[in-house]
Image 1 (cartoon, rainbow, N blue to C red):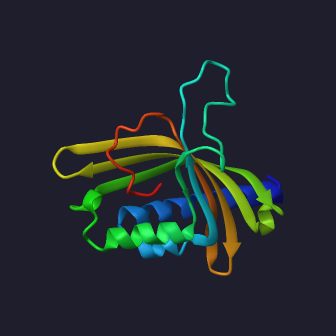
Image 2: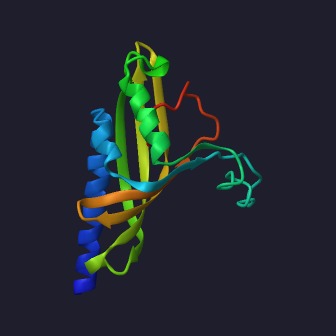
Length: 179
């Protein structure tokens, strides 16, 4: 096995471990630690999905910065959302939801400049989020994420997250949790 291949495998494992640790922070409601993983210039975006005729890939998702989306947020908005939840008087999170994030199929799409000295990585992954609220409310959301991760002095930061839900109609009552 070549040194480049080994470096690529090690980097893939490093990124996967980062994403798994991030999921654990969210599951444990350690939101301030999660916020520390976000770059100051983060773009957190989830387009809406449409039912379209087979082959019509141009209209399947709402367009970034042109159409409506479920989320299109920066760090300031994400911080405000966390602070609202932390007040304990958030109508959709009182009582708090029980959430499990499962992340899998981590693949590196692009590495800059290379695997041995990566400064920025675009990674694709799959997720399953299970949420249970009160006695009877249960939500399961499945989809894909494309993350741009940037290396900082303290580790990796999420600079961009594109979230693609597999469903186009949300059956959940709200989206107060994070992907």
